[in-house]
Length: 157
Ligand SMILES: [Zn+2]
Image 1 (cartoon, rainbow, N blue to C red):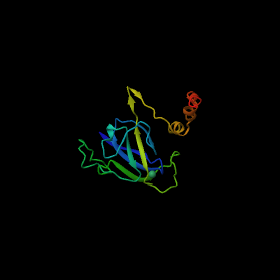
Image 2 (tube, rainbow, N blue to C red):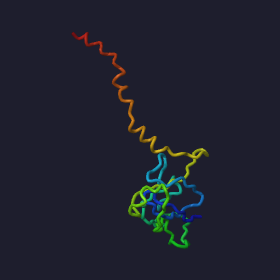
Image 3 (cartoon, helix red, strand yellow):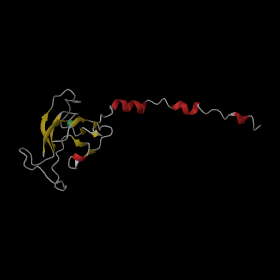
């Protein structure tokens, strides 16, 4: 059982519909991949991944080459497309740049809720991630520490 669910591009607000299984819960649509999430292309078996990687404005047909069993080709508006851009535009607050050209062609990531051992997994906030990367106070430790064996200088004379 799959049906189209509406989302919008976080970059420009372009609205799209994704044909997907009803049992999956969405977490978010973001302009970057969440840490620890695995993404599949819309015409891949994304239901077994943690999310879908999409390109803004790019329609994706329900892959003929894929071996997926049941396919919903009785859609009312589409022809079984997995991703369909509606031509509408969201005016949500969290759209990065509502004035830019749309669709923008940027990559976006739809993340599903992940569970590990029955517990919902929270993504690491991107900010914490960059702080760790740029902030490097561990440097001086290596040079300042083992100063001990400088004694032998007097030995060689
Ligand atoms: Zn966009």
